[in-house]
Image (cartoon, rainbow, N blue to C red; front, side, top):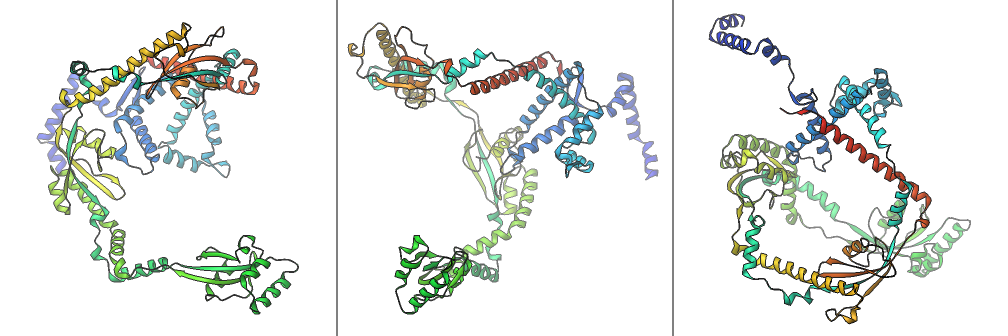
Length: 620
């Protein structure tokens, strides 16, 4: 090997390398060479301070793992990597701005301060004491950092929190403001409503073809056919690789016996006489036992002697039950009896029982012939795990290197299927899976013609797809949407006319007229007394409008209107109730603290935004 190195050092390759070095040195100097090997790539620079690519990628990985951990079934294909990278970079820039601000204000922690914080953190303790091995393990495994990196991150976070806490706790709200808000929250209003239906004006509204054409021309962006693709795809499932014929007859028989035992559920119908423990229990037991031996009726004895009040009135009848429902001693005795047989005294945790078996019923078990196909399929699926994993790897490798799906499908004996009309929002299964659709519309697949990666779209179901045809978004012709536009304009004009009518009624009422004097009104007022903001006696839009109206003065109502699904509601606000004197002091204090905290958070958010706005940020 050494001789080869010596020989190559005299050859053409070595000469080319030397020429490149000479050119680099002559143009850019020594720093171009040294810096090229020693510098660390950056993803952004904040006020002259670099955010390194290594730091950025580490946080991206941590954020990806965090989001996967929040999924019920972790699926990496559902992660939007571009979005994660954008959000992480924005977060790192904001963090750097804040730490620089903390340094400018002279806020810092000594190594001793950091040590004290770390040793007090519960996650680094064992049996209440700081444990260095625990500390190192948690930092590496949970945070993905080295010890030094963690100490630096903690130092930055603590000083930033000092500023945040100082600003957030500086929020202040005047007592009068809190009182006013609380009074508004507890306020009630008396009002009347009059509903005007769209049916009252619909016959007077007309929409012409010219109206439709004019609307179409002015709103063409609303009438486009969405972008779609026709996708070819292969589905690989556990069922596809399962082979029922490979399941042995012995395995089928064993599973059938297990199933038959489970399905052959036997239930027994019993009655009992319960004698509770007590001073005279033995005497009562002997008395009942003798009467049973003398042939007296079990049901009548249960009514007389049984301490189980619920069943005693029914002759001790406790109905049909299977195993595992009663006390073990009761169950053993029950399953040992024949129909109409009565047991001797049976001790349980409840007392002493005399048990009579009234009936027995058993579930019918299907024959082996009836269940064989189902059992074979189940066993084949259970045994197909390894084969599925192997087939999945083969399909992933084959589809990655293939320029179509026919070859990979043929290799694994699968079918290439087709689905058209798949939009960027997805479609019918399997294209209801966001990760698969995202890949289908990626540049590599949509424009370059590659296959997607193999995506797990369900439990033991994987799909690889490609774009067969791409249909860009297109303008829909007027004739296809004319009916839709006509209906929309009809509704719009009807509501506009109804609003005009409602405003005319309100104007007349404000002028002193009554409903009875208005020919255009056929309805009557509906009264709502002492209604709060959370009242449900009227539509939410009505309540919202009621509490937006000004307080009536001089006993004159204030009028307004609210749109509802099938018409318009005219509102007459009569009175407003609620005084500051009625406010609970403890609730006022709690509300004041909440409002102050909210004000402090808003001030800190504004402070953060200010620092971000004045920062000099460069992104390569």
